[in-house]
Each structure stands twice: as C-alpha cells, then as structure tokens.
Length: 388
Image 1 (cartoon, helix red, strand yellow):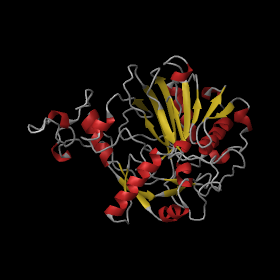
Image 2: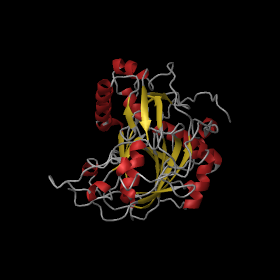
Image 3: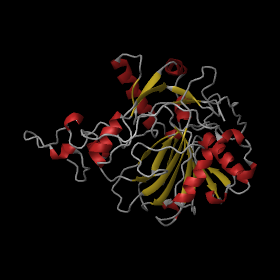
C-alpha cells in the first residue's frame, strides 16, 4: 500500500486474506451514503455573448502593453510585461481572443488579489461554481503528493489524469483563471494538451468516424471520490450529460476533440466493447500528444503529482459557457496547421507563483480557454448567433 494515503474508507476496510484495502459500495460507504447536496441539478442556460467577439483580431491594444512569447507551436503563450489588474476592457477582450487561439496564456509576477480576480473575471460572463466549491465566487486548488496510481485502485475517479474541468455540465466552463498563491520550487507543474491538436492528429478515417459520435460525461465518479477521499460534500447531485465527441468552437469555428480521461466514460450508441476500446485509444492519444503539450508551473490538463515538500495553492475563477455543439460544415483546424490549438474549455487560467521565475510565493498568472483556437495569423471569428 502507498505510504501517503487519503481518507478513503477502503483504507479502513482491510482484507484479512490479503492485507489490502477492500473497496466499499457507495451505498454502504460511511463517507458517501448519507450526503444530501444543498442545490438542485442545473438546467441549460444561454450565456452572454463571448467577449472574444468584441476583440480586435490583431490585438493591438493588448500587445501594446505585453509581449507574446509562444511556448510551443501548438499551445501556450506567455505574455510578458503586463499586469492583469491594469488591463482595460478592450485589452481583456483581446486576451479572450488570444486564449481561444493559444489554449492557455501565462502571466508572471502578478499583483492580483482574490477580490480583484473575481471582479476581473466578471467581465467574461456569469461566474460558475464548481460542485465542490464552498466559497461563492472562487475555489481554492491544492496540489497532491499522493500516489495517484495506488489511489486509483480504490476509487473510481482518475483524479491524477488529464481532464477538462466539469465537462459533465450541460453548460461547461467558458473561461477559467488559476492564480497560484504558493508553489513548490520543484514539481507540482500543470500539463496542458491542445484538443484542437488532438483532433488534427487523427487520421481522416478516424475523424469521419468520431465526428458522428457523442461522449458520455459524468460527475458520478468525482462525486463519490470527493466525498470518500476529501470528506467535502458536493453542493449539487451527480449528473450525466451527452456532448458531441467533436465540438465546434463557437468563436473560431474549429473542431476540438471533446474527450477527456477524467469525466468521459463511454460513447453512447456504441456497444460496450466498441466504446471501451475507443476510450482506451483516446487515453493513449491524449498521453502521447507530445507535440500538442505544454507543461507549466501552475485544453485538457492535469496537475503533476509528486513528493514536493512546499505547499501548492491556487485560486480559480470560472465563467459558464455554451452547451457544446458540432457543426459538420466546419473544418478540423487550419488544414492541419500545427499552429492551431485547442484546450478543452474556452477559459482563462491565471496563475501566480511560477517556480521557474523566482520565489515560490511569486505572483504569476495563467489565462486559458477551455477550447483553444488557431494561430494569430489570419485568425477569423464566427458570427455570433446567440443571445447578448
């Protein structure tokens, strides 16, 4: 058994025959069975118009105060020299456009407070609330030094794997900002994968096959694991939602692979054996996407577990996005151009505390969209057809 363990009930239920934990059914698990969520399940909403539609595609205002430095061809850009707290509305709109293009945008040495972060993010839409979030407008994110491979043997949710935050919602997140307050000098990075790139990397035959499929996204596994491992009660019931396996980015019109290892459990319409094999392939596909991957001290992503000693703590704010859809007429990127990118959400992640940039308490910021977009050259937006 692992030397560092969570509070899973299985660790208190040891088999006399093997000496290893026995997993308990949720209905009989004392950590899970009696919890009653405070809120009801959500219904679909129409969010405000994406602020990226208001942006200058050339981003002249934003780039007048910040220098963009791309980290890879496919995903990730650092904006040097800018303070998020000082950006005006025009520059914030252009930041949304950049995040849609590059998947995740990073800032170093930021002076944002939690209150300023919440106020800034209200510019982008309706503030969301994670199922495990206790504060009204933000959630505190911490790192993990647990052996997630061992933990996975006793809990159903792969919490150390790539995921797109709350992709199971009817309205998944639009933008997210993660601001790191503390970060170890070594370890606890966040890894990001471009889902535009994942879609582009498929063969034409696989693209045609996946285009017509749906994915089943569920919060059930996370729901049980949060209660069992963290003893934190989710604030709303578990939900299962079917979304297109390939979604169309509402701003860029590009296709993004809407599959992640954390919350997608099957492909409705396929037989179980077919679905399981396809899931197995996509797990491999995501983990082997080295050319559509960026790692940062901190769009599917994962926090890299490890044995780091210093604390990792960040504050996340998120806004509600549109219900995912698929448009058969749109193409799967810019004709295979590796500069086109996608994250899973269309979100902004801000992080403070880049260990590669000095003190662990340093202020840095990440801005990320939950579905990224193409390169800055020749970038073109769709026409908005939703409600303002």
